[in-house]
Length: 563
Ligand SMILES: [Zn+2]
Image (cartoon, rainbow, N blue to C red; front, top):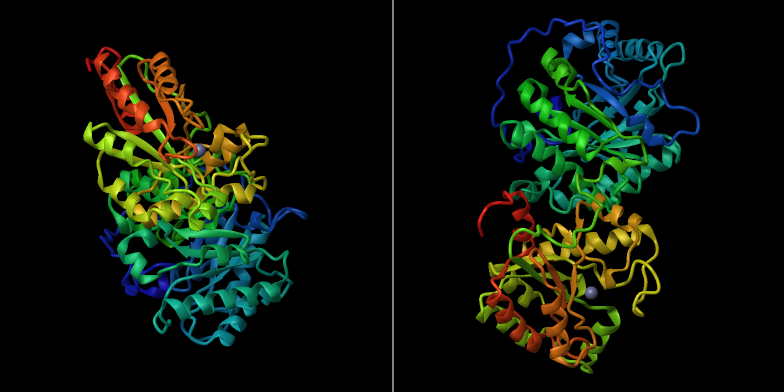
C-alpha cells in the first residue's frame, strides 16, 4: 500500500505500521442482498437548510484514484453501493502528485450522474502534500468547482490531511495546513460542506504518532471544517475485535476532547476493509453504535467483501448536532457510593483552587495549599485515597502531583480547572455559564493532569457539587463519570476536628464515598487532624480503605464474596 492509495495516515510516513495485510481471497462478487443492510437510511443530497455537516452523514463508500476496477464501471459500482445502503460516495479527485484537479473528468462525471440519479451524495477528496500551497489550493477548488456536462457537481469537499512524500516537517506542515484550510473556507463560503479527513486520533496519541505529527491542530481545523472524518485504521494498531473496538472508541473520545466540542460531527472510517476480519468489522460497528457518529464507512469500497457489509448490519448512526447517544458510553447518573455489601470506604479529597486563591498564593498572603499533615498521615498509615484535582492546583504544584501519581496509594481525578461553580448560587464561588466554557473546564484539566502526572482522569466532581442534569450529560459526553459522595465530612471552614470526626463516623456505611479536602488552612484547617482519628476508628470497625476505582470495581464481584 502506498501513500496515494489510502487517505490520512500511511505506513510510508513512518507512523502506521502495517501489522498485516492478509488479503482476503473471498470473492468480491456482489452478494446481492435485497435488504438494506444498514439501519441508517440514505438521504438524497443535503436538504435545504440542513447543517452542512449533513453531507458527511450516513454510510459512506471510498474510492481512490488507484482502484482501476471501480473506475472501469462507475454506474455498476454506484448501483451496488446504493443497494448496500450507502448514502455518500467519497471519490478521490487528485492524489498528492501533481496533475489535473479532477482525475479522469469523464469518468468522474459518470460517477456524479449515477450517484445523483440514485439520491446519493458525492464528496470529492484530495490529498495535498503542503509543498506548493497556492497550487494545492487551486487543485482543491478545482474539485469544488468541477461541473460535469449536464450540470452535476460534487456535493461536498473533504481535505485529506496526511503527510505525503515531499511534505515539510510538522511545524511548517501545521502552518500550511491551517492556512490552506482557511483559504479554502474563505473561497467556498460558510455554507459549503467541508470535511477534514484526519489520521487516527488514537494513533496520534501513541509515541510514534506524537513524533510523526506533534501538536495536531484539532481546534484550528474545527474552525474551518463542518465535520471530521478520522481514518480509524484499527487494522494497523492491533489485531482482533478488542483492538478494533478500543481504537474506534478512543478515536471518537479523543476527537471530542481535543476539539473541545462534544457535539462535533464525526464520520468515522474503519478498516482497512481488505485487512479487517468480520469480527473486527462487527466490533467497529458496536463501538460506533455505542459511542456515536453521524456517519461510518470502511476504507475502501474496492476492498470490501460481503462480510464487511454484513458486519455493518444493524449500524445505528446519530443525527447531526445531537450526539446525545454519543455519551461516550458513560452514564450521566452520578456515583455517590459503591456496593453496600462489603466494608469498603473511599476517602476522596478535593484539591480546590480558584484564580483568586492563586493570586493570594502568588502574593504570599496565603500559605502553600497542600495539607502536608494529611498527606503524610495517608502515607504513614498506608491509606489509599482519591484526589480530585483542579487544573490550577495541578499546575501550581506539578512536582507534588507527579509524586502522587507515582504513589500507588493515590488515584487522581478531575475537579474542574479553576473551581468555578456550574450553577449559581454555589457557596459564593464564581460561576461558569457558557457550555463551551464548561466543556473547557473539563478538557483543560484532563490535559494538565495528563501532562503533569501522565494519567487520564475518568471521574469528575463538580465544584461545590453544584450542577444540573444537563451538566452531567455534558461531562458524560466528554467521557467522564460524575462522582458525588454519600458522606460529607463538613471540613470546609471547620476549625474543630471533632465536628468532622463525628460527621464521618456517624455517616459511613459499607461502600461509602467520603468527601473532604486536601488544601489545608485557611479553608480546611482541621482535615488532617480529623483524619488522624477517623482512619484508625474505621479500621477498628472492620472497614478497608480503597481508591474509587477499587470501590466501584467491587460492583462486579459477587455479593456473597467474602472480603
Ligand atoms: Zn471543590
